[in-house]
Amino acid sequence: MREEMYSVEQVADRLGLHVRTVRGYIRAGRLKAVRIGKQYRIAHADLEALTGRPQPAPARSAGVARVEVSSIVQIDDIDRASADRLGTLVLAGANTSHDPAHPMRVQTVHDEDRDRMKIVILGGAAATAEVLHLLEAILDGGNGLLAREADGA
Image 1 (cartoon, rainbow, N blue to C red):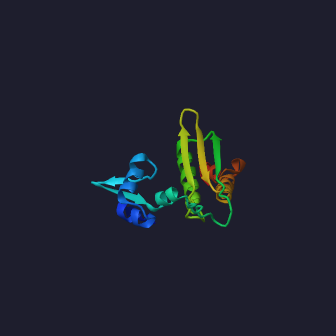
Image 2 (image 1 turned 90 degrees about the vertical axis):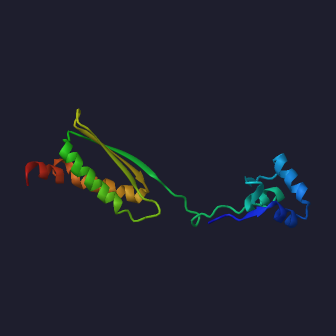
Image 3 (image 1 turned 60 degrees about the horizontal axis):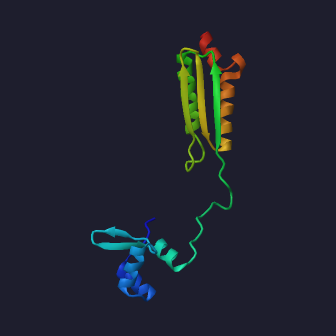
C-alpha cells in the first residue's frame, strides 16, 4: 500500500496557507518532507501530524496477540548421518505449518566432536508443539525411528 504524497502547493491549498509558509515549516522542521530534485514531497501521515489529526491505529487481528515460541532441543549420541536424516524430517514437519502468514523457522547444528545435535525452533505455539511431538515420536527413548534405522530394520 503506497502512501499518498503531496507537493508544497497542494499542502498550501489544503491548509489555506501561502506556499512560502509551508516551505518555512519544512525548513524549520515542523513539517517532514522529502526533497526530490528541486521539489519537496510531503507524506499524508506527515501532513496529518502537522495538523494534529490523530493517526489511525494499526490494524490488529481481532484483538488477539500473536504468540511465538522459541525452543532448543539437544540430542546427544547422534552421528552425522542420523543427524542429517533427523534434520530433514524436522524441516519437512516445520514446512507443513498451517499458517503461511507466520512460517516456522528451524535451524539444525551437529557437533561431530561431541556427537551432539541442536535443533532451534521458532514459531507459533501450536506449530512448535507439533514439531516437538514429531521429534518425540522419532526419538522415543531408543524405540524411535532413528533407533530402528541404526539397527537396520
